Length: 190
Image (cartoon, rainbow, N blue to C red; front, side, top):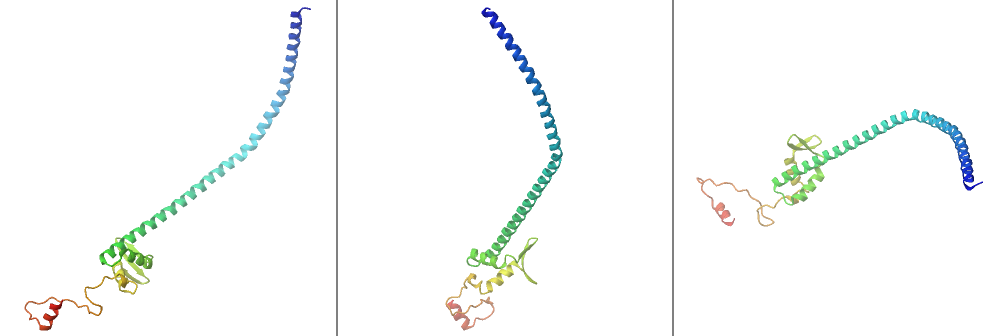
C-alpha cells in the first residue's frame, strides 16, 4: 500500500466514524431537545397564571404609591399654607407695632406673637384677636398689651422731665381770654 492509499483509507474511516457519531449525537439531542421544550412549556404555563395577579399587584402597588404621593403633597401644601398665614400674621403685627411707635419693635413683636399667635385671625383684609368670647381689632389688642405690666417696657417715655413730675395736657389758649398769672408763670418755666 502506498502512502496515498493509506491516507485515503484513514480519511474514509474517519468520515464514517464522524458520520456515525454525528447521527448518534443528533438522535440523543433530539430527545433532549424535545424534553427541554416540554419543560419550558410547563414552566411558561405555570408562570403565566401568577403573572396576571402580579400585574394586578403591581397596579395596586402603583396605586398605593400614588396615594402616598398624594398624601405627601397634601401635607406639603398644608405646611406651605401654614407658613404663608404665619408670614401674613407676622407682617400685620409688624405693621401695627410700627404704627404704635413702640420701643424695640422686634422684641415686642416676638413677645406679642408668643402670647397671641394662636388667637390672631384674619377675615378678609382685617386682622383681629379672638380671646374666648372677646373679639378685638389687632390695634386694640396691641394697645391693651402695651398697657399691661409686660407691655409697659415698650411704651416710649413721655416728654415730662424728672421722675416725680406730673404729665400735663396742654390746652389751647383762647386769644380772647385773659391769661392768669399762674398760667403765665407755668408757661415761662416750660
